[in-house]
Amino acid sequence: MTGSANLRGSLFMVAAMAGFAVEDAFLKAATQEVAVGLALVILGLAGVGVFSVVALRAGAAPLPRSIVSRTMALRSGFEIVGRLFYALAIALTPISTASAILQATPLVVVLGAALIFGESISWRRWALIVLGFVGVLIILRPGLEGFSALSLLALVAMVGFAGRDLATRAAPLTLSNAQLGVTGFIMLALSGAIILAVTGRVALPSPAAWGLLAGASLFGILAYAALTQAMRTGAVGSVTPFRYARLVFAVVLGVGVFGERPDAATLAGSAIIVACGVILLTKRDL
Image (tube, rainbow, N blue to C red):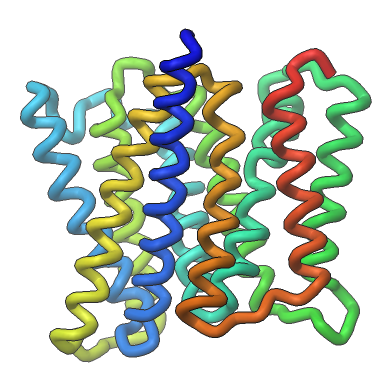
């Protein structure tokens, strides 16, 4: 990849992370009125519609036969876990805290690649993975007064997204990003349906809430498209570290929109996670 391609890819990645952070903010605002399950169903159906159109315009079926496989079933299961628990984390905990914990996902992916795919990991990389998890524990503060059991929602979501990413590596190469997008948003809608099945019937959103959900859908879809473009434009090692820009945007939105005040432990843990992740992703010779 050329330097200009990597630069464009990095800019697309930053744009994608900004979009996902804004989507989270819209979703958090909407779920102050709308049930989380209903919000996820609406966002999921919107994404399915858009990516189905993209797939059809490219001359492909939104749900091809290759979507039915053991690998895709695993991917879908992990996607449901990640989507469901992260939405709950966004709704019930500070957006900055949930986003900070989610940033440990690449560390879990590297760990999973070693345990599942047999990839070789040096002791230095193992040390970074362990240190990254120490950062997560600093944010969670288990056993201390500042600990909130609700923060475990983001932790479960992180494991779900890591499992999804690992399963994606084994997914059929014939599946396009649009087709994976269709399945991903179907899982998002199913996550909402699961929550609704537990919580029962809910009222329809008000016009203001519909506007917030529309904003979440728009930015979520645009962010997914930007993420796809980023991964296709620049080298993975050059582009992927910019995923951590999401944490910066999340903190800014959390403070500016929701009046959150991340404490020293959250900021310190976030810094450790980001530093370990960036080193892991950029220093291939460790």
